Image (cartoon, rainbow, N blue to C red; front, side, top):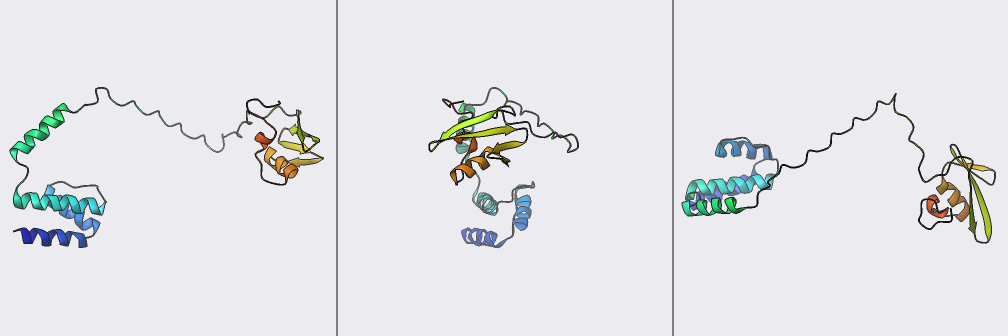
Length: 164
């Protein structure tokens, strides 16, 4: 009998996932939604062995029931998930609000850098520095330093202990 089980288990490895699911339904009497081939093979191999050699002993079943009874069970239900907010239709969606770290338009940001005093004016949609317009503070910082730099960090905006 053991030889037949070994052959059947070896044959399970060659089956596709859909064939394993069909075999699962035949052996367990219920369908499965599982699609993990290795799990299905293990589960089917266990079931084939249990059917051929016998299931758990009554003593093992009692012990499992005792362990389950002593387990710490959740006494309160899990918290309900917050309802997802539906995104606004594109026609009604407004432009994203201004970053709270930015000062109001018209403000002049002053920064000492390599012995020079730099002044950048905050515009309603961008920044002005040396007569040129920039879309972001990072672009201004790159123009000044020559390398990528976080504009908020460079101008010390929204940073504790900053000059501004």
